Length: 326
Image (cartoon, rainbow, N blue to C red; front, side):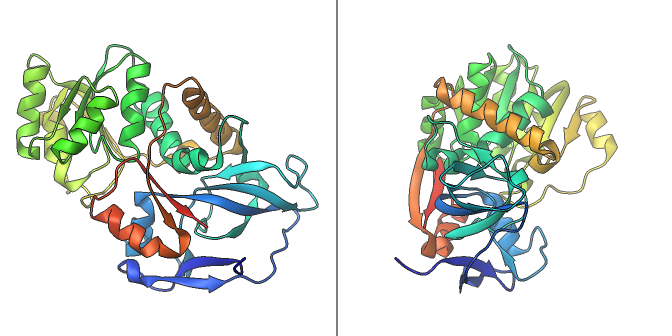
């Protein structure tokens, strides 16, 4: 068995800045838990941290999502014990590691029906989907919703979740193959047209009205199409920057688009307390357990090959969720 280690960055830049750092003995503080990771989730936000789009104090760990087994608990920890199966998706970065010290307040116990890979593949993306649909956009049965990057990690959860609660889904993906995946996930319409043709296509599918909600994790490349696809008083939720941050806009732009609303949420404002975090995860696990949200793990990389996993993610060579395996 190899020595415990973690991956860190000492400078921002391309995937090549990811370095391996050996770990010495780890002892939990009074309110901490030592977790041995079994599976680690790779998310697009990890590339933002690595590249410097989201600035970090350096050096820094990477990743926030992992699942594993409790090895030791601190003196004040009463809710967890050695041998517990747990997951974590919020708090300080550092999930790219074989072992990790985690505040007990940021841990979730995994239900028996949720295995390590399922948890690591879905917690961050799935709780993001829960937040976007049920607490941010508050999508209602009968609403028509555009999902961008519908075959990606978050998109492939958003599509079936929306269908399960009675929404109509117009999925958009970058290639015909990814559009087919979105259709298989249950989208009512799965488009792969250029962005400058999307709004016209959406208007034709909605009788000229547009959609109540757009869930947009693409950012710069989709901004104009998303805004032009909204119904009067619709809501654009821009939650990611896969193509770069959205361009500057004015309040008058929202008026011209039909008195629309725009929000830029981050999951961590919606899981700010242990209670919010665990409630979000419980809702996600409920949706998975009843089959409403299928879990699609596209590819697994060894943890040591995290740089190559970042390259694959940024090159759009992945679908579904990507895992790092210690």
